Amino acid sequence: MSTDTPRISVPRRPHSSGRPQQARSVQTRDHILIVAAQLFAERGYPYTSITEIADRVGMTKGAVYFHFRDKEAIAAEIVRELYNRWRVRIDEALAMQVSPLETLQALLDNAADRFFEDDIVKAGARLQADRSLSDTTLPEPYVEWISTIATLLARAKGAGQLRDGVDPESSAYILVSGFFGLQHLCDILNHRDDMPRRWQEMSRRLFASIARSAE
Image: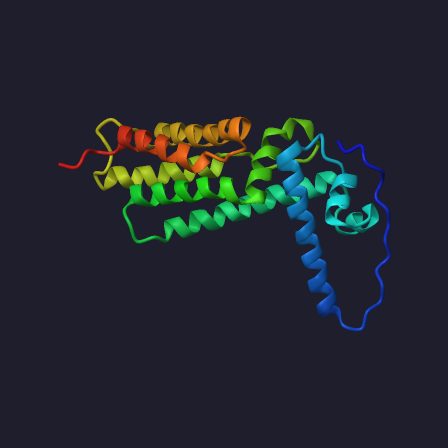
């Protein structure tokens, strides 16, 4: 959906040692992604151009096109990186030697911090919201979150941690809706500056509604 100029072909220069140049290329590519993520998070996908990305990176458009085919390719890579980071966080939480509800709380607390601190996470959320404005095929959002949380809640139910009548699957939908809805609201109203605090307030109420009271 990009209106930017077609890709400029930049020939590769011969070099005597591939590894240093390859490392620099990876670093440059990562830098482009971070800068593009900042712009996408600030302005949204349709209002960010390759020219703006190149200017902020301090490169020519041709140099950016050397690393990415077009703006859609940059957006798709940011979203892929977002899902990679979520998978790492989920795996870390699942490896914790604590109860299922404590695992779930830690997972969502960490995700709330990432929305406050991580440019890739901020941009990925914005790009998912703008997905109808791009021709890029993006992963279906929230599916893995719902599945992971439902699994943790099922374990919590088996461990006697949930109130009677709490259904793990429907509760997972409620938690995911509440969490991601909150980050969107915090983004619109306060650029997520209050995300950690608002999440702590919400999580106390959400977890109190499903967790069995200590006797």
